[in-house]
Amino acid sequence: MENQKASRSIFFVAMRSIQFAWETNKTIFVTLIGLNIFLGFIVYYQFIGFSGIVDEIILIKQGKSTFPNLVPHALVLGFAFLIPTVAQNIVSYFRSKFRLDLDLRLDLYKIDKQGDLDIGTIESNSYQTLLRSAQEWGSGSMLSLQDFILTSATSFSGIITSMVILWSLSGWLVLFAILAAAPVYFFYKKYSMEVYRIRYFSIDDHRIISNRISHFEQLQKAVDVILLKLKGWLKGQVGDRMTTYNNRISGAERRKAVSYSLLSLWYLLFLFGAIALMTYYTLNGIMAVGALLLAFNTYTPFTRR
Image 1 (tube, one colour):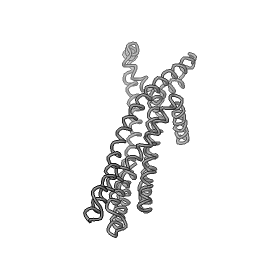
Image 2 (tube, one colour):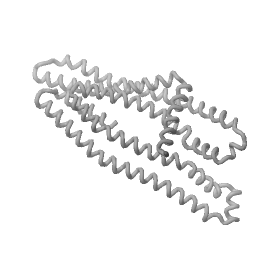
Image 3 (cartoon, one colour):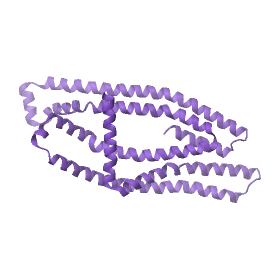
Image 4 (cartoon, one colour):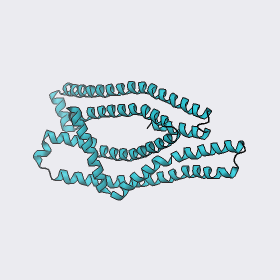
């Protein structure tokens, strides 16, 4: 039940975040996604340019080519380094501008919503819990989701490009890469959801903790604590709730660390398999030396995304 509630919450926040970003500035939002997709695949042209240079140098040493034939490969490599740098600067500018627009719209949106509430609603526990959730997760989670969407566009573009390159060299490399990366994705999603659920269902506890701590920070409340001798009770409440929360988070992180350590062995298994296959192809003339470098440089980033 809690899993379903957390999943629905994540989906709702994600959809609302996308809608909010779209309504804030459609042009910049689409431009950022397009630029991040572009950055995802342009990096692989560095590998292509470098592998072409290596193969051309070998042909020149064998007397089968000449130095002028290196020029196209050098140009590809040069532009493959120059263009991402320029594009990244443009992305940084637009992302900064978009964040400012988003912050402004979020603040005005919260003022509109909170200004229409009645006193009874504001004083209710449910509203205070919701307000605490908004303060802790509202703008921060929305901005994080915006960044996640943009980085996902880069990663997705890079994955598609790397799969195309690997497939052009050997279908087995694609299979090895997918088998190595799939469990990592599964466990990353699993433990990210677990940490989110712990934090989501601890919002009310954090509200109570903040309330208890405020008794030592606000003058009138601090006087009441002294007169009524509430120090021990308040300290116990804060300590118990924080200890429970910290133990749950630490448990999730511990399980994540163990799982990722085991997954590293799984990853190495397929990495060695891919290296063995690439070595076999190169030694038997099926794959050129430059193609070997291209395959290796494409395979390793793909399995670590």
